[in-house]
Image 1: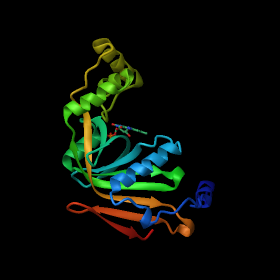
Image 2: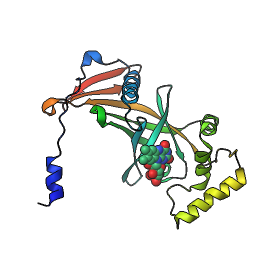
Image 3: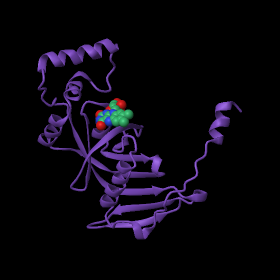
Image 4: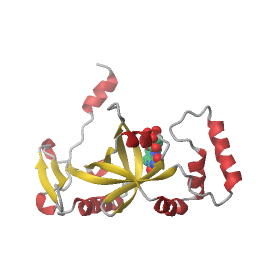
Length: 215
Ligand SMILES: Cc1cc2nc3c(=O)[nH]c(=O)nc-3n(C[C@H](O)[C@H](O)[C@H](O)COP(=O)(O)O)c2cc1C
């Protein structure tokens, strides 16, 4: 075996933080999520609102990438992106998506599945206008997911946007948000002897079922 494989075999964490018990859970997984997000913030987890977004295209080909959760409103998880990007193309072909929050420093993960829809353009504009100027210009400069011939071309696009819009770039028409309406939310807390705690919420008509899953 090569040494990297030896190293990988030897990498092993012991999960020793407070367990998650059914009695501790909020009946509403969105409230439970807010508590855990708050814990991640308090613990100074790096990028606590970053998650992996998984999508699937019409051929069943999956892909994943990180996005930032920017709001939790009306029971929906909201993130922003470029509507011409690869992820947006996938979401047009198939609105089913998954968000994975990897709070490894807390020996926790949360996995959310559901369907997405585009958010209202005015709501996206409100958030867009609250972003730093560099990010707003960057949204104009990047044809996200398309090939760019060089770093210089990308930087030129940014300078062109700066020259065109100055200090007040409007929201690009191709930039906006998605709201994921959750159908399932799973909370995972690492435990000793690999006996992790997993609780799986499933959306019912007006409530949520909660089941404990084997680790
Ligand atoms: C920590 C982190 C946060 C990110 N947040 C976003 C985001 O909120 N929106 C976004 O469009 N891309 C974000 N990205 C970049 C994406 O991961 C991805 O590279 C980009 O959206 C293009 O993905 P696509 O080609 O699959 O559409 C983030 C990347 C990282 C590492």
